[in-house]
Image (cartoon, rainbow over all chains, first blue to last red; front, top):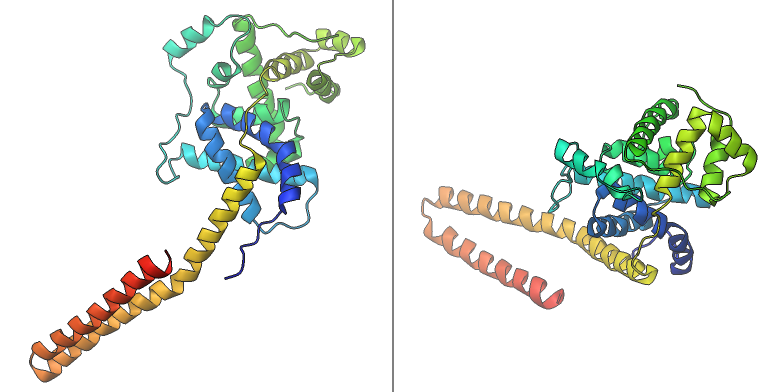
Length: 175
Length: 129
């Protein structure tokens, strides 16, 4: 039997992994709210990436493609489509959770704040404000139209900013 | 909604962790950039994460790819096995109907099923390990 083909050689994969694994893991931890689940999804995403028959892609496109696979895997988890996995909880909008959030001190946990957002909003803010992806890239990763990104991002940013102000978070920038 | 031409620059500065004075002054007077700065600096606080070693991920992917390939290769064989089973049942019913007795076809089917079962055991436990 022939050896199965993977889309990258071990050496190329190592470089690609070094550039993408940590950002992807952070993204997945924030989407799923669970480090163990994030690890599983991370490995599954790399497997699907390695098995895909990819055209010649630049570094940035490769990374976007990987993030798209991972985003779809997390959405499948939310929909309970993954065999043997429990569907993830979408949001924590309960008043109990919100009141707990209000008690979070200045250096509040990013995860707790993000958990108040819907999964799609989490994807959006993380890609835009942590990954620094362009609207076109976000649209590709999330499977949306580019024109819809700006208004969506505007609404989520406003929501998040209001939430951060309400818990007393102030930006700490090095001048 | 009020887009600002400086938003991208403010975001880049937030990622670098250095906000030039002119951008800081602009952000102080622009609601869009102030929000961008607030959200980006907050989210940027926690971006470190532990990941499995690349060699392990690659090795697992290779292993799984091989297993998937083997499973795919077995699919036609499984289909043949199923077809043979259906054919065997049809022949047995046909013979039974033609001869008017179920004894001979039942012995034949039993013999073929025993050989088939033995073949399955050999294939499953001895050949594939």
